[in-house]
Amino acid sequence: LLCEAYLAVTKTPSADRRSKFGFERLPDFDARLWAKVKSDADSKLQPVSNNLIHGSDIDSKVVAIAQKNCAIIDSDTQIKIIQKNIFEIEKLENATIVCNPPYGIRMEHKKDLSAFYKDLGDFLKQRCTNSTAFIYFGDRKYIKQIGLKSSKKWILSNGGLDGRLVKYVMY
Image (cartoon, rainbow, N blue to C red; front, side, top):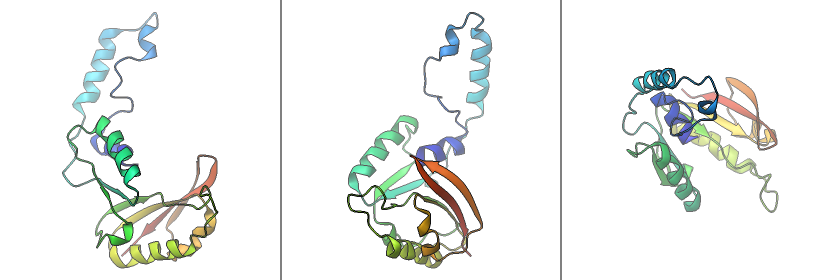
């Protein structure tokens, strides 16, 4: 999610870091036209303001993997990733929050996460004023547990899960 946010904010085309593309081997490939298209796209790249994109996870292994992945596209390390429990974050005001919390489905023993989702809803209400949150629910039963009124829902299949991406606006 952090890499996708970075690419969107900086207006970086997908596959920008690739050095070769299959279409370059086509018989009618025009290298000059491709160079112009690439140059035009590069001229539209935008810098990302410092401290704009943040990520956290409670698991240090997940943080290390995310840092490694983000370093591929973010050589200036503008994407900040820390190991932290979301409930330890003091406040997130005027923010856009994108969250992919645990679903309990793939855990060894299917775990009931109702209390976690209630706490997540309380966190958003109490500490995320004037923010918008997009939460992915791999298990739709938890949508009601969060205790917030949604402003929009999208069907979103992820890894074979019939999930929902839900938008919440906090005031």
